[in-house]
Length: 150
Ligand SMILES: [Zn+2]
Image (cartoon, rainbow, N blue to C red; front, top):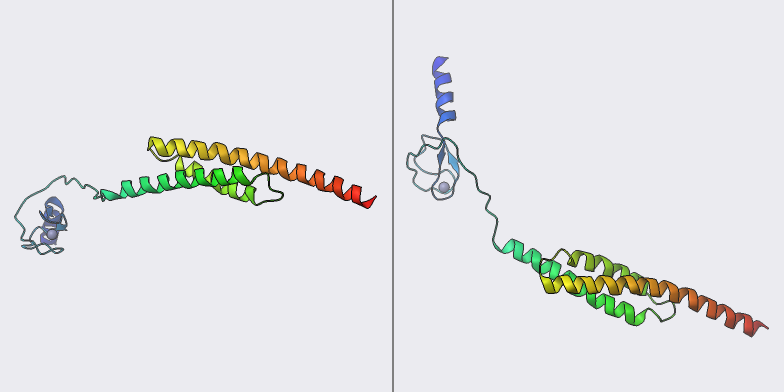
């Protein structure tokens, strides 16, 4: 009974970490259970655990926001160019463009941020213009229809 308690306490008090892979091992282990590295008796009371974040991950994320900024601006230009066409799909374009530009604004890159701002402005403008154009074309077609019925 008392022997059992002693063992428990000893296991809790001493922590062994592999010098190669950092895996915690039982304190009587000679080799790492994870990688097989030979273990030296090193007592660690407070072990610091550092998360291993791959260095390329933030860069990939940054590239992603840059792509959204670029795409948002291209969509904005297309939306502005097409918003006067009667009942064009401009509104659907520009709504996607607004979303892409808003995501592009997450980029810390200055050029990408400017592109995203331009995209956002163009897409909002195109949305308003395409709705206005829809109303104007409806009025024009109504007048033409009324005139031809006479
Ligand atoms: Zn190891």
